[in-house]
Length: 463
Image (cartoon, one colour):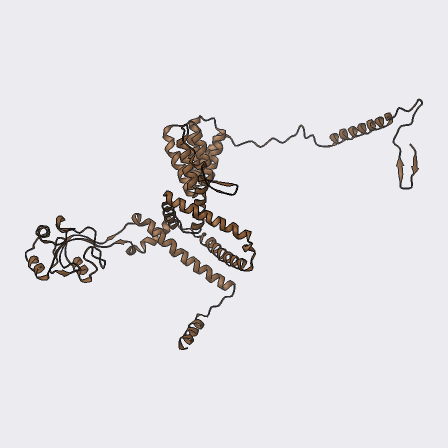
């Protein structure tokens, strides 16, 4: 091998010398490559000789937990009230265990119930669907239907629930897929009935953001009732797309780029930011059933059914006639007979003077109007008694029989549980909100001087 300077460095000639004969083109290059390959193979052999024998000492792969252990884990987690983890363990058990189709459906349904209990509604729906797809007994179907319905309801996906139920009843029939029908088009975009229903649900969820659960449920029911009719849905559809075209036109005109718009947007953003921060703080409130019970026990007087009375009337034209008739009435039967014969009120005379509805202390008296003296007299009279004088009302002079009286009743906790929860949630939120604001005032060194405003108002009044 020779080396020759080339002005740039050393030029290495790796070709083999020729030992006679004519050179054969690229044969030298091939021989050179062969030598390089041999050298590389020798290096690989040496490295294998000095490195650990990984091929014979390979680590065993991780094994799944035995089926019986998975089942024991699921039962233990469930016993300790860890619903989400227990549900996941039962799903793993179904994957491993040699179960029949019916047994798998039962375990999947149980896992779905646990996930639903833990608030993992989307995961629960998957498990319910899996159970439903398997061959199972008729006894399981009501639980599956109820579970799917409750999960979609909890997620606020009423449109998806409707079409899920529709699809389930349409299987094997010639029913038209109502949800796929086009209800609107805007440019190339087509909106189906199902997509429109989802838009309604999304709008409702935004409106309910941060609302206490009891109030949210009441408003959700009210909202769905409002848009149950075809006419209401048609109006809402027009409203939604009117807003959409106005929005598009505004962007096309670059209204959203103007300083005035950006200032309004910043103000709205600040309001939303403040609201979200407060809702985040309120979301930390965790009240138990025991908390609500204690709240109720301390305020039982607020949850009473007041005293009530039912009355009858005899309406006459003048006071003397009423006074004379009153002197002849001794019993409720006398009163009912006289009402049929002499009362001027066509609405009640055929019923012996009976007035529908109830009278409560301090409230309006049905048909007779607002009359404190009359109201007081009703509750000062025993059931079956006739008030001892006629009363001037808007129609003439009335004689009044107190037919029935129901004493004041303290409502048990179970009867007013929803109201108690609503009351305590509201009170707790007010307390937490004020405490949080006070904390932030101290953090950001805020001091208010409301007296200055009172003084300014006084000066303004003088002028």
